[in-house]
Length: 95
Image 1 (cartoon, rainbow, N blue to C red):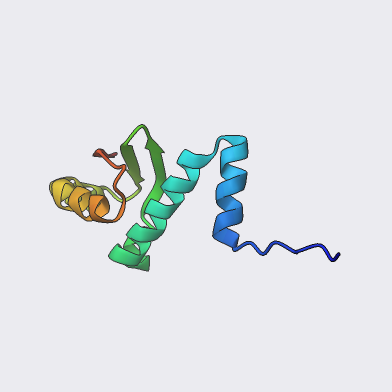
Image 2 (cartoon, one colour):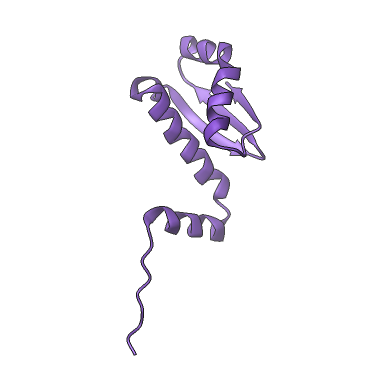
C-alpha cells in the first residue's frame, strides 16, 4: 500500500503551526494588517508600524501624526469595515 501524501495549503499550515505555538493572535493581526493594506492602499499602510490583536481588541500604531489623527477621526468607520471582515474584533485603538 502506498502512503497518501497530505497536501496542505500554506494558510492551513500556518494555522496549524500557530495553534501549536500559541501564535493565533499574531496570525489574526497579520490578516487584519493585510486587509488594511488592501483597503487603504500601500502608501497609507506603510505608515502603520504595528498591528496587534488581543481578546477582541485591535491596536494600531501609526507613524505619521497627520494620518494618525485622520484615522482617529474615522475610527468608528474603520472599526465597522474591519468588523465586516473579521467577526472577532470588538474594539479598535489607534496610537
